[in-house]
Length: 343
Ligand SMILES: NC(=O)c1ccc[n+]([C@@H]2O[C@H](COP(=O)([O-])OP(=O)(O)OC[C@H]3O[C@@H](n4cnc5c(N)ncnc54)[C@H](OP(=O)(O)O)[C@@H]3O)[C@@H](O)[C@H]2O)c1
Image (tube, rainbow, N blue to C red; front, side):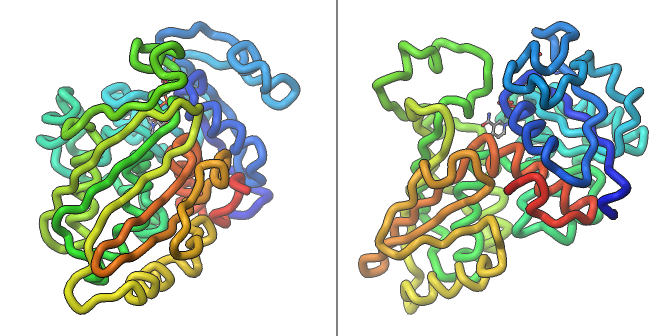
């Protein structure tokens, strides 16, 4: 794909948090032309600045109902929609020959029974589920190049998979008793107001939630099991941080007998030394949310004591955890440099 011939794209869910973030990045992408924007059931037809005033003079496109999108003749559609809402729309778009990049969980879990158990929704598109590619760019790049449908990984999930996949593949750490303790800013819950994310309930406080019940658990287990080549079942505890954006995960693992922290370092370097968006920070330090906010970077570091290792990883839930990863996938699918729109 050359810069002269722009790829036409549409964004479904432009009235939501991750849709907004995506559009900000698409507007600076030299090879993409935004032709359509869609809202959902709680908004009416309007323009982007009506929804988000910061788009005044940047993007004045109308935001219409989902049905109006196809008339805009996009080559690719981003679905920044809740789970359950994305699959029926993806199914229609794929049938029309469009490429789809889905932010939701609808195509992430390979086994529809696992999806239905955790998300309590019947999967309406099992045929496309079989063809969907898991959009963890650093690990599935070759499949993404050929994909028509990409499932963007969950935000917490990405913060866990990035540091752990190489260590399990290289058999540096034990697959047993991995503990992932994650903290997310409140935008991770989207723009819909619920009592849990109400300002008075979340400001100046800090709490864990979803213990043994969070829907990202089966997704983490699925991908870590692929990496380890055996079943992995992690202990994952998310927390709600009283900040707007950013995730920090603290991950507790054990080195396998005979393995050292040098093996861990070598495994990370082998996996990520050529990956622009992966940043290995000095041993013995903690990564920080303020260093990754508004970026597509994932920072990680580790501290070892004997066979015990504490890993920290950080990313922006709205960027590397959603819209940035979606755009990186788009770049791979259409042959653009992966950094387009993202730096
Ligand atoms: N927030 C994050 O940090 C994050 C990170 C990773 C993945 N994700 C995933 O990304 C997706 C979007 O999340 P978000 O945080 O952007 O949510 P959000 O702020 O709540 O936005 C949801 C968007 O979907 C639209 N929508 C809702 N139901 C719809 C339907 N039935 N048909 C068409 N449009 C519909 C909404 O439109 P109206 O408001 O106009 O009705 C809105 O534009 C979710 O699947 C979420 O799990 C989010």
